[in-house]
Length: 500
Ligand code: IPD
Ligand code: CA
Ligand code: CA
Image 1 (cartoon, rainbow, N blue to C red):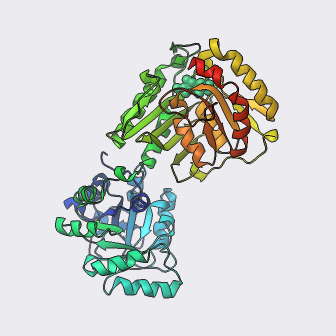
Image 2 (image 1 turned 90 degrees about the vertical axis):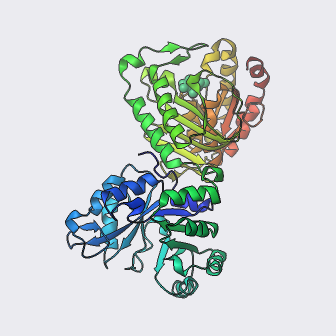
Image 3 (image 1 turned 60 degrees about the vertical axis):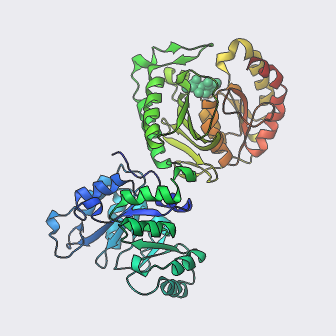
């Protein structure tokens, strides 16, 4: 599928854009049909609306009670079709009482409860808040959205997370402005012609439900700006790609691991899988952000001018020596810069099945759970050392002497063989600092975003912020440990400067 939505509805809303919801029967398909589902997915809309009914036995997607259920798609089939679609939300217009719980039960079975939002005519108090981070969408068919908002505030004592979902005919410039001032969302249905789409996009509705989602998205780009121009990162799809790259790594045959080529410097190996994983990532990522440029290890450049727009910095397999030896400590690392500034990092350890990621300003996570650096004193902490193996001839003594000094200050030291994972382990508090005399931008671009968002610090041995366009010495640490490690590493900065 080519044009699936790249952003969740929450991301789009947070970026100040109108969510586009594909209405049943969108793009000229029969409502609630298989073609309808595929057209909605392929339109690129962030949300799709379905009508749900039950024949007493099973849940079906259909609008009118008179429809023949046997010709309709079951809700269960629908969930299985969506299994590989990353960000799309589903707005369930429940047409009969008592369907909220069974819908959620099936969604849960497919691990997709996060997709579901209820907006049906049969609002079931209390249950409607399930799904979508407890967002509550209240449907109104007549009256004034303002009045409904006040009634809601009186009934529940608050307005948080409320979106009024209404017939577009009830929306005026005045009530739209009023709801916005109150921080209440306003969603309109069913807006399908160009003039109306333009009007409601200019009004900045929270959501537009439309039978022409492709047109709505094109007009949104024109009127409100593209998601990319609002700084959005298609995180969910990037995660899917990075995890798939990790799967490729794990499928490596022994003859590939045992037959590496050598690059410049000592012990600098590359296997056919470093190249294969890199190609896989570049192909997938360039579909997600078509204008993005790439700075990737196996392309053979060591320095790069980082210009305007998006640049992915990729290490397809960080820890190639481990990978070759079957040491099972390697990772896929993908950083994303916008106008030279790091905005996203994703690092996947396929052996522990741990995916570390962060979007600038939004905190860091491991497999979705928030992570933070440790606050241990260094006397109880671990420092990881990077051996700068490709500069063994010039830096071995420096590295060993530095290790001795760090060992004396911390409880113990480690050498993992994967810089990307060393940074992640500092970010999640498993270790306290990580120092390496020379690393390349692909080793640390993703990690620095993750570490910064987890509350850690990163600098060169000279204490400067890290340069993402050329190799650099690196000190990473928790707030406590970074200071101690930097103090030690500083004295080695002049020696390293000479070899860079
Ligand atoms: C290497 C690893 C290693 C570090 C080297 C890196 P590669 O990356 O991260 O831990 O010591 O400096 O170059 O070559 O395996 O991608
Ligand atoms: Ca690397
Ligand atoms: Ca590598």
